[in-house]
Image (cartoon, rainbow, N blue to C red):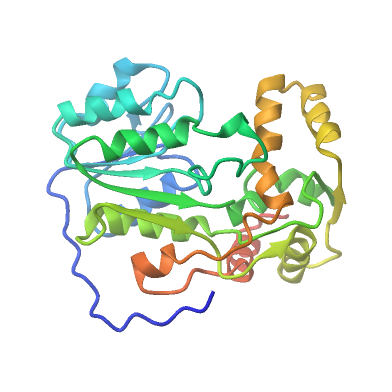
Amino acid sequence: MTQTEDTTPAQSPTRASSPVLVTGGTGKTGRRVVARLRELGVETRAASRSGGTRFDWESPDTWGPALEGAEAVYIVPLDTEPSPTPAFVERAVAAGVRRLVLLSARGVDVPGYFGDSVLDGGPHLKGEQAVRDSGLAWTILRPGWFAQNFSEGVFLDGVRAGELALPVGDGRAAYVDAEDIAAVAVAALTEDGHDGEVYELSGPRALGVTDVLDEIAKVAGGTPASYVPVEEAAFRDGLVAQGMPAVEAELWTAALDPIRTSREAPLKDGVHRALGRSPRDVAEVFRDAAAEGAWG
């Protein structure tokens, strides 16, 4: 996708006069959102089961104290059924929150995006509907697969071990930088002009897993880790053999299907629309990760 540079003047941030609550405040995007907000001088509550503000999706008694007096909330939802997000949004409205920014996921509004109906109409879509119906100012973020999954997430152990086995064939994905997701979230939380927007977020180019591993090798040194394609059934059975519940293993396998089918390959313009710049490439993301010792 070809993008043109935005030549309009940058908007001045509208700082929240009350705290911004960040759920999942110690997670991949949450901790980055917290850091960026605090750099801007915005009073921020990092909420999680182990964070400065206690918050547990499975303990609704923690929601009220976390929400008290908050001006805006970044919602990192619990991806389970039944989804607790609608009930949390109701509590946010009752607490006087004025703005919600929801982390959703790419493809949640496309039937069959995840291969079959297993994830259609799931918790992300229900969360989106809840914030739309809340009566508050809202922004929805729909990122694809994170580039950081190779440096600090679910694929890291395989990369470090030298062999990454996945059921994605030759599929490609435009992996998105978690820092870009955080930057868009912070813009939506602190600036005017983002209300009612749904930002589809991707990186600037689509790569196969072998391409990604080559990019890591360029900055980490040594021989690239080997990519080993496996069948979906074998992958799912392997997860169960490692102790993962069968239902969760099925969901994980389905979540990878958009990479296998290259549904994650088309480039999206959400970063450019929100920030007026191009998204960061995985090469830059991995240079930073290598400098921090991600792969030893």
